[in-house]
Length: 343
Image (tube, rainbow, N blue to C red; front, side, top):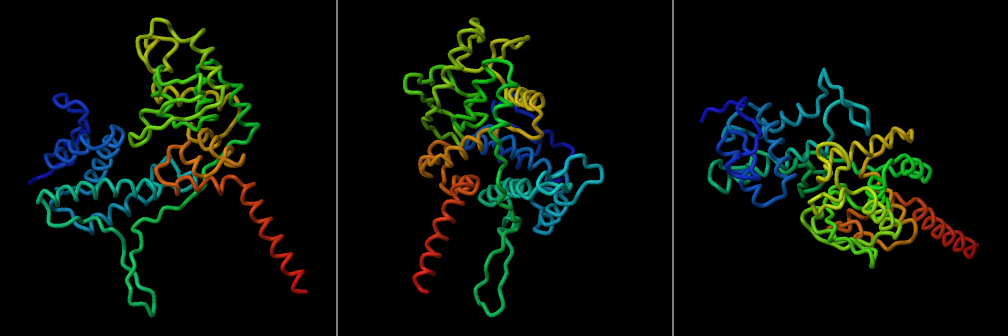
């Protein structure tokens, strides 16, 4: 089959709501399956990743080889001459390892689908690189892409105070407190319906968490007090949506606030507060780190954060510097005591 990458459009299909099509039969069949199995954000990311791959590897899916995949990795990692964006962790141009790894996962998912369907004989995306240490018979798999485990930045108390003071409305403060006091994700803040607030219990029911998982999250009474003020004085009475946080002014007044709208609010307050870097996810990280520093058990922190794996929560052991320092102090005291006895 001839394949023209210029035909890839990445547009929604009017005949099938919730489905994005790229203009190639095999890719569109795969995206239809993704739409049935995953959430909208996953569908959009998968479609974009496939569009990038086939725009650079200008071949029909049946013609793609492992050599093409390795060439794609090299192209993604190489800095572009006209690049205006650099990686924050090292200041270099080119995509991060995490982004490339995600794109490879999207590509591998496509070819797994095509293998099952009988369109291609094998998946050209390697699972890893074989390596054997000297003197060892066992061949181990080296990851194709190594992703560094970096610690997220946490705001200092002074930065938190400055940021909150720079917020202009009670609605904005309530959204910030949901992340700073409850550790909610941005999508969870925007998706909370009025009916899922439980003021008497100081808890919020999260019906649409990451991956579609539900949980009940306790949040400080300060958040509910701010929400009460927002509902009493700012939220349009004519709003017909059940979403808690809505647009306050303009032609979209009373409609649900968008992710870009929340990002704009956070960016504006950050600039007014004189903070160089601040994102919604950093507000969440700050909350979870402070809870760990205050002694919250790791399993409880996992439930608060909505992590499916405890491994995702362990990062807050390292962010909470006081925990590590205390554990080190106790160990050193035990070592010193043993040394004195041996003398």
